[in-house]
Length: 295
Ligand SMILES: [Zn+2]
Image (cartoon, rainbow, N blue to C red; front, side, top):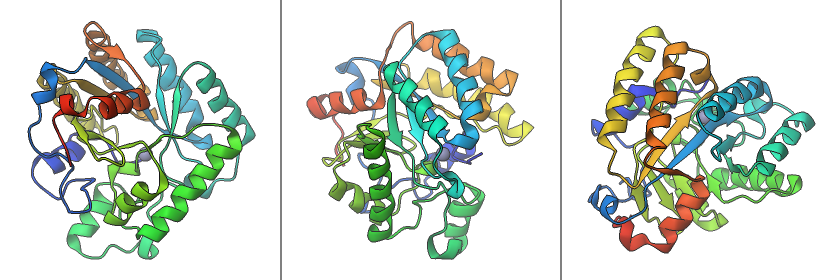
């Protein structure tokens, strides 16, 4: 289970700590004027399923069934080709083929999902908090140089090509991206990425404010906090152009958490259309003036 979830994750950015996925100048792209876009852009929601990998696939499938019990929406799967060094898996690839044939999008979510930059050794207390406490060592792109990030992104792109799948988006584990990762994305032709609080079109870095609805399931107290936090977050973002449900396999396992996001999703679908992240990003490319936010 990765640690990119929960009120702590969301709060760390809201409290003014270094943003999870700051741009190369250290700012989160488009850190101002949030909310302006809501008056003009069409209202959408995305359902993003994290950590798709052979070892997590049973949980992913369970999560998908729960989403589709609410409505048969198109999903965006965040795929990890070699999670924790696991070998290729033909059944996993066939399952992703099936998802694509249903109209889902596949996006790249790292190569191994493991933070082993600098031998995995954090560079100081803040780096330690960010890379160990917040992500439990899963922030693969938190500290990579541009060349190291490029190498992993290229491996991911090659795997997508070998499988015959298009690839438009990259979302880093825990949304943690080093400056080198931002530079690598610019060079490799990705159409979009996400931070915890924004969808960011590339290479323009036009950003759309959308704070992730994301649950923490690692402990009972985290789950309890997540319920209230995410209900409030969904209410607070009712007028925003885009609402993001960022779900992990564990979110289908705990009844209270499952009921919470299913209820929020059902409500949101009464007033929003579900699209994939790529579709939302392409709308952002077409109407950046409506988004009103630029990195
Ligand atoms: Zn992840």
